[in-house]
Image (tube, rainbow, N blue to C red):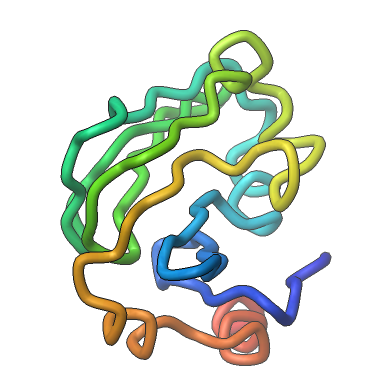
Length: 126
């Protein structure tokens, strides 16, 4: 299972990629494999504020509906509209096509609370 080394990870299985003071957020390969085939993705609107550990959307699979939890706090500045018509991207390409939102960080130090790829892999193997 792939766990890109340049990303940070939350205990709730979101990945975070830092890009010039903004972060791109999605769910991990591990999370999508546990959920099964994704059939619907609900995301916030551009301009919404998200807060660490609070739900900001959901993914629905053939098995269940799962909340998405914000790994950091900030303002949503971009939403991946492609997921509306193609939720299967979450299964096919969780780190590329299936990014969910781009957020302007309100506190960059929150990135320090996230796990490295090695720490995340260890957690998912326990």
